[in-house]
Image (cartoon, rainbow, N blue to C red):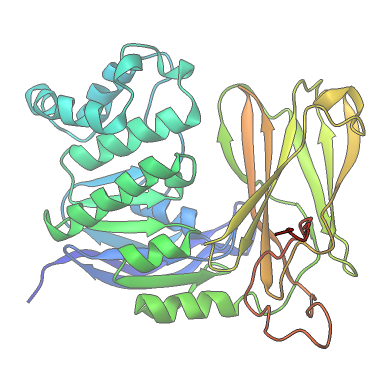
Length: 383
């Protein structure tokens, strides 16, 4: 019989000063060497569950029985001290795990090589970009001794090459080293290829636990009802570089008729220089992506992305012929360089209403995410 690495029994977690639950009656078991994918919409309770398992926050009721050491990489910079160098932070993380300095030193070369930040390893962590912090954080978590590894959407910050390295390493940790991994991600392709079990969380509750393919189907069914606007009354997923909040996103809306205008209402809490909004467009399985960035030289935007204190509304006009006939997901990113990077995932989901060029066209645009119109020219070549 395979050894049980993790047993979760009836975990509940209430919101502060509220009768509502962020996590509600979640129970499951994982065998040693399992890779569990955890998926769900933004705010479903995925991150709260991992923080409870990592003993960062206590549950309101219930318990988790963990066999062995557990490591968690939950957000950029977790467990790191910004004033210490990358090298010093490696030793700090190892000490937190209860490892000896000799053991950490034996893994040091592998950690630095895998992270790709060798040239910056002696510089303070506060000078690192988000991607560099993730590189170092994942490398420390992967190469230092642990039995259970918790990963919460952290790979979304790294570049594509490093993401592939990380996914390959996670597979190796499970299959070759027998480690147990809990992996939260909106990238359904990674969930499909990497995990052998899947949990779908919605409104704090586990609505499915079992085969990964079936889990993904359950998750996609949550998006059958389309939504055209989003008001924000809770904190978004935030990657903070330094300082305090400097802006707030109040609402995101999309034109419900033509589906080609995305409107973002935000408030500058202090003067913002070089403030940028990004629109990321996906299909529902997260495989296809297009990035629409607020341009620095857009004359229609006042002060070239510099904003005084106040409320603003910015609209992006997407081409009417951009989409095929498919369900579309939109994520918004708001970036104040060197200060904050806010990510509002899956804020808009809608069904594109494109129905083809004309009645004589043979074929279908079903499941085609993008079908932009490009300029074509033709000429007759003379003999």
